Length: 150
Image 1 (cartoon, one colour):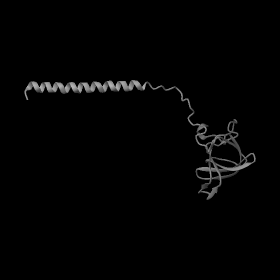
Image 2 (tube, helix red, strand yellow):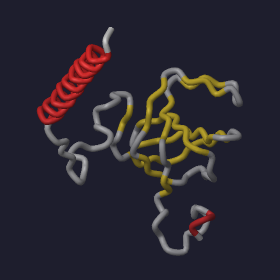
Image 3 (cartoon, rainbow, N blue to C red):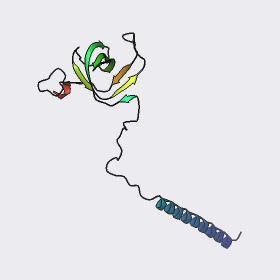
Image 4 (cartoon, rainbow, N blue to C red):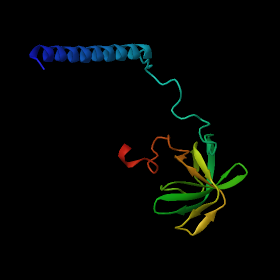
């Protein structure tokens, strides 16, 4: 093949590659322009956890009086009364006294629930996220303070 034919063939291949890359670039620009900008507001418009996300979770405020305490290595099981109702709740391990009044808002109902440490099966047990003593905001209440907040 003469030298001039090779130069023309190279030129032709380079022109095709250049045309292909230009077409690819234009296609990418057109596709990205059709997608439009992403608009993100400064704050989420929906709550992080919808109240009806899990129907087993109660989010009503409950005021309970402790009737019985069963402690384990990680949790405390409490038989409590709320009005005329008597039931069991469980929360993280903490000092709890019979007769004390507590509040809680979130509880997940478990039916049945077995405590292996006490070898006991609770017909219904409410797993409480945060158990708050009724006197938590009273000045001078030292027994229920969290140690790192003193």
